[in-house]
Image 1 (cartoon, rainbow, N blue to C red):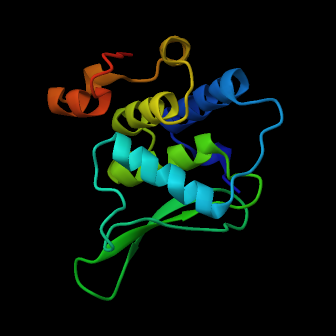
Image 2 (tube, rainbow, N blue to C red):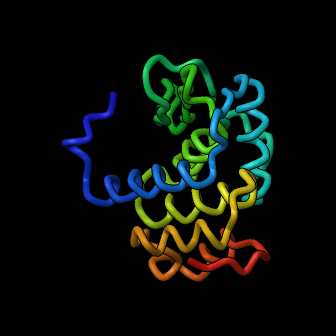
Amino acid sequence: MIDKHHLDPVTVTFYAFERAARKAFEPANPQDLTIDACIELADAAFHHLQCAAPWPVAVRPRLFDGVEAAFCTLVETQVEGDAFFLIGLPPGRRRPWVVLHEVAHTLHWEDGHGPHFAWTCIQLWIHVGGWDGTALMTLAREYRIDGPEHLSRQDVRRLTDSTGLIL
């Protein structure tokens, strides 16, 4: 379980925003996806972000039944320079928003819950998850989630696609 008392302020703010977003956009009685459906959703997310889908074997995240909480971690292998992401999705956490959240971590591992991660996650919730973009961006502003002003122009172009959505 995540110890909320030892989280940095950026993560605390993002989790509060995420709870509010789920309350606003997730169906009342959400059903868990199967692991296969989670993998398909992750592939759709990478395709949307114009990454190779399916991922090359060396970097393709491996999804499995997690134990307690959903998580994403980088696993380094015995082969130098070889690594992959492992995403754990336990029953009760196999929801589209969770899968997309964890996929966003694989693209911005070093960012934690910072602006690169947040922007990517929001874009995935909108364009892959089908959440209302205008309402979600408004909510992000209310929670002071850092947006594209904290990103490079190249990152913003890549992440916004041709949508024109801006935080």
